[in-house]
Amino acid sequence: MKKLISTNGLSHEDWLKYRKQGIGGSDAGAICGLNPYVSPMSIFYEKTSSEVEDHDNESMRQGLDLEEYAVQRFMEGTAVCGIYSYGWCSSGAVDKSRGQADY
Image (tube, rainbow, N blue to C red; front, side, top):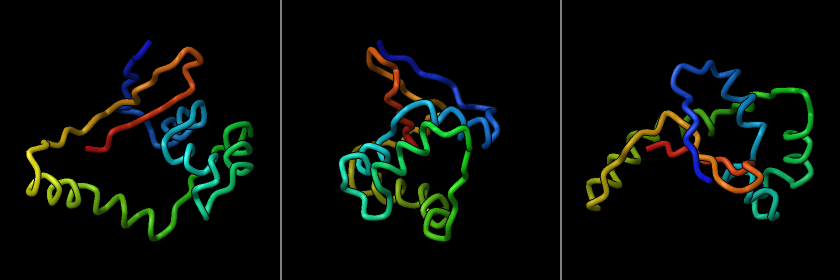
């Protein structure tokens, strides 16, 4: 069963709390041992602890700042149009997979 959970109007802290309830694409890579910066155990701790941490560094901020530019450049060379999603797409019997399309 697929559903879209709106994030429009959520505070950043509430968005972070919702993110803890499932596993997204970035988490999946770390869980599989493919992320040299994040271990599977750190994902486990992040998802099961009561703490809500906001990881922020210069690289992450630059990535967020450049998202729209990257999408525009991608659309220039392809026939794909970008769509911003103000929501989480959730699917699966356990309802723990999470995805949010940026554009």
